[in-house]
Amino acid sequence: MIATSTHDDIIRFVYHETSEEENVLIEQTLLAETDLQRFYEELVETKRELDGVATHSASERAVQQILVYSRNFPYGRTAH
Image (cartoon, rainbow, N blue to C red; front, top):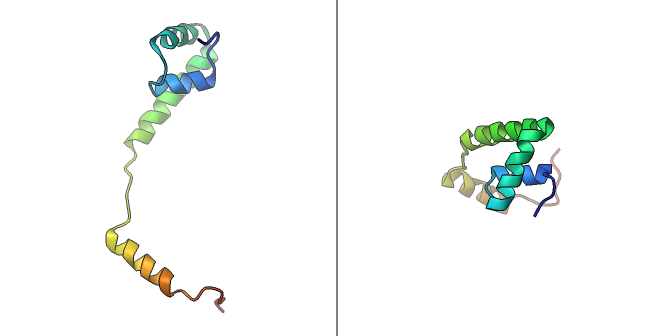
C-alpha cells in the first residue's frame, strides 16, 4: 500500500495498473495535491494524443528491397 502518491503511482493509475485500494488513495491525493493533479491531467492528455497517433509500417515490398540491398552491400568499403 502506498502512503503518498508519486509520479510512478499516477502513471500506473492512468494505465489501470493499480489495485482498487491504491485507486482510492491516489484519487484522494489528486484532490489534495494540485501538482500531482496537474501531472495527472497532462499525462491523460498526452496518453489520449498518443493513442490517436496512427502508426504505419513499411510495406512488405519495401522491406524486401531493403533486405536485398543490405545483402548486396559491400561492407567494409567506403563510398567516395
